[in-house]
Amino acid sequence: MRHLLSTKDLDLSTAVGILDVAEDMADVATREVKKLPTLRGKTVINLFFEDSTRTRTSFEVAAKRLSADLINFSAKGSSVSKGESLKDTAQTLAAMGADAVVIRHSASGAAQVLATSDWIDASILNAGDGTHEHPTQALLDAYTMRKRLHGAASRGKDLDGLSVTIVGDILHSRVARSNVWLLQTLGAHVTVVAPATLLPSGIETWPVAVGYDLDEAVDANPDVVMMLRIQAERMNAAFFPNTREYAREWGLDDERLARLRPDTMVMHPGPMVRGLEISASAADSSRSTVLAQVANGVSIRMAVLYLLLASEGGQL
Amino acid sequence: MTVRTVLQPADITRALTRISHEILESQRGFSGHGSLGHGGAGLVLLGIPTRGVVLAQRIGAILESIEPGSGVTGSLDVTMYRDDLAGQPTRAPSPTQIPAGGIDGKTVVLVDDVLYSGRTIRAALDALADHGRPRAVRLAVLVDRGHRELPIRADFVGKNLPTSADEKFRVRLDEVDGFEGVEIE
Image 1 (cartoon, helix red, strand yellow):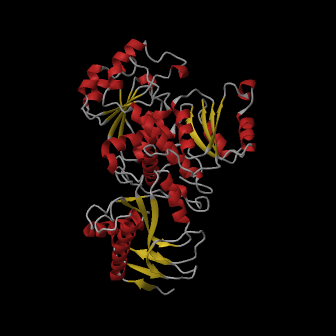
Image 2 (cartoon, each protein chain N blue to C red):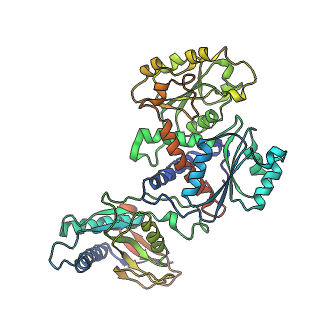
Image 3 (cartoon, rainbow over the protein chains, first blue to last red):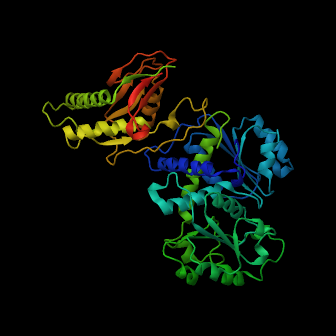
């Protein structure tokens, strides 16, 4: 595979392989010189049509730690705001000799379009396309779970038997989708919990159990609880009466936190809206992996960039 | 193709024992301590994955039996520093383990199974520089088969085996392969 578009494309050995390479990349952060010469002379372009703090910076740090040249391109302040199409933008970047394009776009399938068109001959990394997929987020989540479970002995392991409950705006969440496919491949059992209005139609075809009651889900004693943000920017209708009611019914508050096992992981892909889907004390508790997820994101993205770019016609 | 075994298990053990003594010997001269018993101070053995790590551990164990405290070992992965990444299928890196004391001011002995083009060692020297500044870097190999492409030589050699470049050369070690021997095909 020359591109990373979806976690659906990853089989078990490929997925575990990426996580294993990320283990080695993580070691770089502890060294005296936090840089590897591996991707010297490669050009990576961060093509972001949507806002992002974590993902864009994370890819930037990852590319720079591997000595690639990284160019940040955001839709604001570029010719896109003058009406340039994705095709023209892609061809412009191709003419500049990009080896990889990290793309985030509000349209589901934008990364796929770049990868399958002949506009640009570069590796395409999907950094979030609409409500479709966000594969590196799912990989870093899986890495974080594996690291918490197995510590230094993580190499080669999958997530067999782990129970993961994903709570919140499943309908609009690309993170949830990528996680569901990847976690299934890695052998984990996924439950999604949300108000019925925030579950996509066709959820019954997903490899997940569906619940509507967070209290029940908490009492089912999951190993991981992953809270998702309410994506107000994608909401064009009233999906729940008001935010206070949502927080009461589907937010991870202090009382629910107290009922979870002490070693339950509380995950959140960020950005968090404290007081809505997650309480401040849940976000800051020792069970929270939020900052570990950010740190691990750099290692995962280094691993993916390495696997795609280091060898000619690279492959995951 | 015929397979010739050029080193038997006993030959490998003997070669590693000799290398161990030579390492201590040179270290004595180098660190300026004429007396016995100070040779191993400041030594760090770093094996290059995969088989170099096993060899480093074996040499470390021998050093330890001669002079306790002298067998500090670790591993140094050079994958990310190779100059041939582009031409090959993607290689999965191996772990690097630098011993707790670090390598600053130490004498680092790089250990590998076969010395051939010298490119792996070139990569190892680059990798080492990113982990610190050793006082000196030495190279120990089980087999030197010639055909160098870079101005690199080994300080400690188990056996010189001049080969033709189209012969296949294989080092097999118990810990990795389940049996032991050096073969030419």
